[in-house]
Image 1 (tube, rainbow, N blue to C red):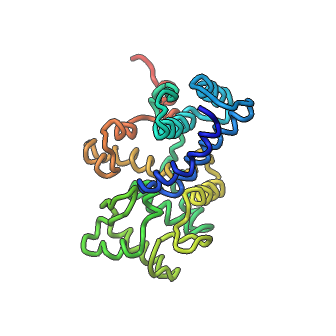
Image 2 (image 1 turned 90 degrees about the vertical axis):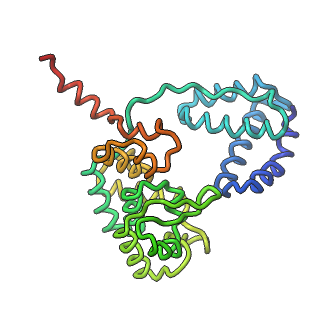
Image 3 (image 1 turned 90 degrees about the horizontal axis):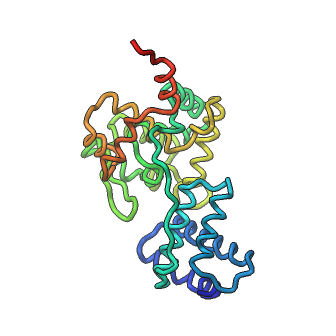
Length: 287
């Protein structure tokens, strides 16, 4: 297959994905990853390429320390999907094997969480309410950014749930009544009367992006003098999962709360952090 063929089909592929209701942010990731592969081939002075070149690209990313295995595998998924679209399944390759981690990483402690929350309330009220929602609902970042004033007000009829449009469908997610009231109070104070709870100041009619919210959470984590590795938006979902398993010994209920389709995903919250595992071994003595 030629590089020219690869380049000429990108726009049609993007249109096909858009028709499948893939989010704009995801489309940008798809396009960037395909173009990155094309640029790699051009740097190798290739005019056409084969499966072996694709394997070499995977090996190149593996040797480049800036790429995590999970990131490389995401790139492979995207490129394989593109090759399937081009009816070139013969070019598809396997993802890298990754050893299963038997511990949770970069999860803040409850003490860390409280310090981050205090720093956010003092320095960035948007980050404060984002963290508050994430830590008391377990909602994914993308779902939180889709919360609207309308969805919060509609939930008056069912105070402990709200409806969110995410990933092409409406989902009813648990949302404590006290939190809904507090969030609506914040919205009223900020004169956010309709639309997204976290409206972007840069793009009218759009919510904050995941990247921007990540920066906000990262910043207040630094202000709280907490390890920045723990300062990512998804960390608070993990924290809730870890803490709630101490109260609820029912994997199915926890799976329902977090929207897990598999109980294997839920079981991660029963795992210890590396620090906890280390402490257990250090404290252990044969009796």
